[in-house]
Image 1 (cartoon, helix red, strand yellow):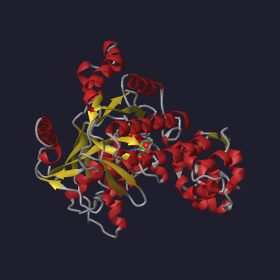
Image 2 (cartoon, rainbow, N blue to C red):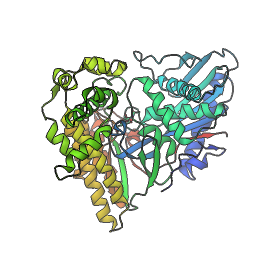
Image 3 (cartoon, rainbow, N blue to C red):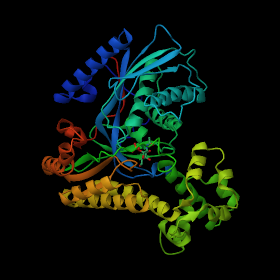
Image 4 (cartoon, protein in one colour):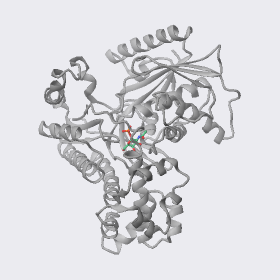
Amino acid sequence: MADNREEQIPVFTSLSEIYGEGPLLEEAVRRYENLKQQFVQHYGRQPELFARAPGRVNLIGEHIDYEGYSVLPMAIRQDTVVAIGKREEEYSMLHIANVDSFEFKACKFPADPSQEVDRDNHLWANYCICGYKGVFEHLASKGELIGPTCGLNVLVHGTVPIGAGLSSSSALVCATVVALSSLFKLSFCKHEVAEFSCACERHIGTQSGGMDQAISVMAMPGVAKLIGFNPIRASDVLLPKSGSFVVANSLTESKKAVTASTNYNNRVVECRLAAMVLAVKLGMPSEEACTSVNTLSDVEGLCVKYASAHGSSSPVVAVEKLLHEAPYNTEEIEECLKEKLTTIMKKSPTTLAVLAAASLFKLYQRAKHVYTEAKRVHDFRGAAVQSDGEESVMKRLGDLMNESHASCSLLYECSCPELENLVGICRHNGAIGARLTGAGWGGCVVALVKEEEANSFISVLKDSYYRPLVQSGKIKEEDLDSYVFASKPSGGAAAFKL
Ligand code: NG1
């Protein structure tokens, strides 16, 4: 199982290294040429280099990366490309523009890496500033500095759908980081880039796990990756040849950064509260629980020990016996922890925002999801490598995807009516398994289908989910291929000096 964590981010001189041959390469050549021309029009000179980072589809392992558990995504061919060059004038400014200048307006920022990311004014280019800060913060953490900053010209073109659970945000952060690293001639290993790209994306205000940045940087063509954390590592997972993963966009945008305190960060905080309460119930002094327990993986050992006394090896036993299903209110949790939640969390403004927005916390449900989903990831990987016939392997993978979806929907409550509808349509039309993918509350589903049925499956989805939206004028027929597509694992982030 190859682990490429020590490799450096590649710098290619030919697009074929990533885009292969044939129509995909031809499309890429046109796209990069257009990016170059627009860069010249915009900034009056050629870009010095390009960097690209792919989006991803997570096959299984949802909302568990920030709890320290392994996940199983693959990179998709849709990516974000950044063209970059140093400015010759106004060299204290970063100019950041997008080829899609209607949707994503051009922005200017000071070339000061210590600037704060403005969380109250959510701009698309804030993700570039996260990447910019990340490079300098990482260098500073290693005791290295790259001298005076310089002004930069940046032009972006992305094909990863926005707010669709395919990680357009991390593709932009990682592409920015790779572009800057190459421009400043910094040689970082893949795992370093994955770690600090994850840390710097948190400047946006979400308490992200590291899955998206890790797969964007460490992906290899043709394989999905089992990504582990602390430290980040990635091993290959070969998927059954007779299966195809189809991604379908529910077209409900999930605005993760804007809804963080009620959705994404809320779940991160609920998991932390569940972990602390479990720790105390399992005998840890409350003071220690409040200071040293952050994630459910921190208390898994205690839960497993408890389970073994009850004839099981599953941490879920502790959840079922020690937590109650009814939501907890703040007072009950504070009584258990013998401390005010606002005091425990005082150093984290994003957590305080969650506490201000919620009064009830579903500790039982969230913890049960995390522990069962963590196990499903390993079961999925185990099933994928089994040799007892592709049909039965695919059935097992599909069942695990369905179980994952049920858990996301019922226990983690990160689905929405459009995703439920789409998952139902997938299953009624031959999907062996189908589930929401990514953070949820909108975005995409991923369905496993037989390779030979993928095209007809996609046609049926177009007819049943998308065509009514075309007829009502909400979407255009010519965009359908970007909303529903079969995906093979693509390669990871790279720089190009063309
Ligand atoms: P998306 O789907 O890109 O919003 C988010 C997190 C992941 C992971 C998934 C849920 C970021 C950058 N990504 O992904 O780390 O927690 O949700 O599994 O926040």
